[in-house]
Length: 201
Image 1 (cartoon, rainbow, N blue to C red):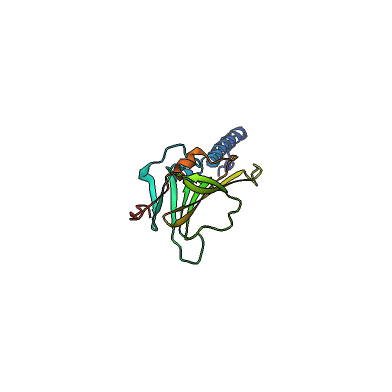
Image 2: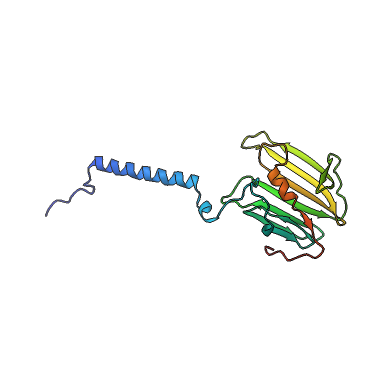
């Protein structure tokens, strides 16, 4: 009977070389996964937190109660209709599309409709919006660290056609003024007596 060959006949130097190759391949795959998550490959383009393109009327989104706004490219819209009991009431919520989960939203625009002038606005300042009287407030928060990122929050209140509107813009960025890229989208606000159907609703 012939003697059995050893289980591993490969020289140790060859084994170490193969192990090194496997380690390098794993490291490349791990780095790729960290830099380009799978969901980023399948979710499509991301929206800009502060749009750089001009408003496109083809992207106008409507609320059933007769107000609308042009939505930035690659953003999502959420249409809320009040049940008379809970927040957020009658509103439009817009946020950029994101290819990966985030701890913090990049930015958001919210438009709330009110039957009467909102209360608790003593710290707002007078301004104009679309050539008419309005109130605004600018707030900054955060220290810029990961646990407490810099934030800018903008509020705008105005009356149109018998209803009051409270518009907010929020972004995680180290700024203290409303960006022009956002202002032009807020200026696209309209009210409508005969409300067209929202194709996205």
